[in-house]
Image (cartoon, rainbow, N blue to C red; front, side, top):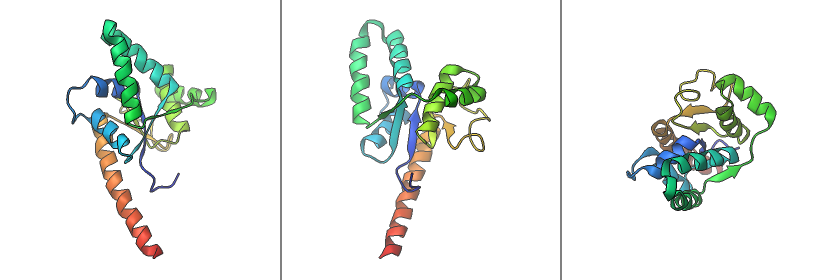
Length: 171
């Protein structure tokens, strides 16, 4: 990965659900989706996260689930959200030692294996503010939607400036 590539974020089900169900186009999740749509950032989810998202969405929407499943699919495509393979068991086990919760360990492990910089979630119990997740234990850090949005905006500006400087020096 080139340090000047678009910022690479992995999304947890909680962020995806919040973005889908928000009426506010300025919500962090919706804005991250828009940044993915225009190619400013790279967004990833694992198969596990998609299955979890569908399960939660089905419970929340009941009879409206078929309509919301279409909305989910459309948003994933529009935001250029790529799917990564489910992680190896060894990585899941390492992450289980960090999260103490296997489902979140799977989410974290997939983000680590995809070499994402940030895992975006609203999970306060096992992921957000977990002092075990982040350097030196992991390269990536965990952020809420709002934190990730601010970080991504800063990274996009910074990396664009650095690319311009690099290109100027090559001339």
